[in-house]
Structure formats: structure tokens, C-alpha cells
Length: 244
Ligand code: ZN
Image 1 (spheres, rainbow, N blue to C red):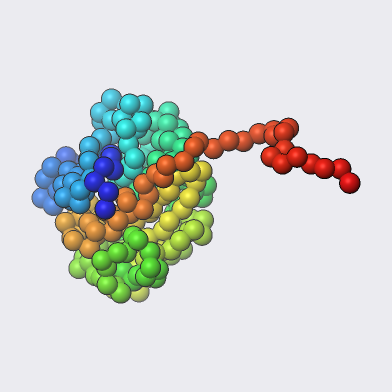
Image 2: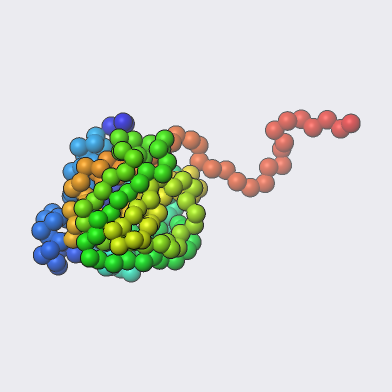
């Protein structure tokens, strides 16, 4: 695993400050829990939150970010369109994006997907069983044929997303629903990984399998060294054309 990847962990950071049940699970915020596990995986991490100037996502921060992770829920509408456009441009240029849980409704994910990204949900603490459906995929390296989260919020199909370029994980919930919970996309030069677990009242981001998949997802989404994309009129052919 590369040790040089620069990861910016973005978190809305509202539930943790307003709901004692959430603060009990993530006393320093979801971003700090994720930062600790990604730092332990060997990445160079920084965090950014909604209430910082420019949501912590300045041009300079994004220029130094290889992969951005995104957790938001109650304040998607407060994320400025200007910052969303900035993140979108960086993704098209090659920055990786890992969208977590309720980030399915974030402005940036909906913009990249072009669909409503809506789904069914229920919060009664059901068991979730996540099945690996792409066993050769780097995002599930180190994961068995399935793993379980003892209690989670249910997300159910239909999940209104474009068909993923690669589907890596499918969840089953105790109440009967299923969900595409690990989805990979390519947009421009950028890669996007959506990973479902992480409701704020459950300790899912403390669970080793969840941490491993996020770390693997960051590595998968990392940019590759390439020249930037070129488009437009090409008057000069690459090869000399010979008239017969
Ligand atoms: Zn949730």
C-alpha cells in the first residue's frame, strides 16, 4: 500500500455536536474516527468540516488532496454550490472520491450521478450482512465472502443510481431488504466509490472490516499519473495519408 496518498476526510460534523447519542459513539466526530483508521493504514490524512471557511475545501487543500472522503446528512443544502463545483472539477481531473452512507444525498454525489440517488430507509438497529460480489476487486482485499455489522440503519432498493461500473458489495438486512452497498464509478479521470455503512448512532466506523474497505477504497480511487485530457479539433492526422 502506498504511504504517500494524501486523504482529506470531509464531515458535516453536526450530529456529533447536537445529539449526545452520536457524541457517545464519535466523541471527536466521525471525521476523527475515520482519520485515525486511515492514518493507521499509512495514509497522510487531514480533515475538513462544513463550518470551516469554504467548508475546509479551499483550492489549496483540494490541490493537495489525492482522495476526498465525504460524510454528510442533515445539512447537504448548506454546502455551497461554488465548493461543489470545485470538488466536481477536481474529480473530473482525477481526484478520487469516497462517498459514505448518507452522502448518497450530497450535492456532489447527485451531481456526479445525475439521478435522484433516493432509496428506502428504516432505523431500528437491524443486522446487516454485506456480501462480496466481486471477489477479485482490490476494495475487498482482506475481506471474507461476507461480513456482518451487528446493528445498522437499513437502506433498501430501489437505489436510484446509474448502474455501477463495478458492483463490489451487496447488503442484506434482517428486515428483508437488499441494497447495492459498494459501488464504483468513473467520471472523467476520477474514480468514485460509494460505501453504504456509517449511520451516526452506530459504531460502524470502529469496525475493522468497515475500516479496511474504506482504506482499500481510498487506494482504489487514487489518481494515476497521466497527462490531463485533451479534446477538440485535430486538423493534423497522426499518420501521413496516401491518396490511392
Ligand atoms: Zn443514516
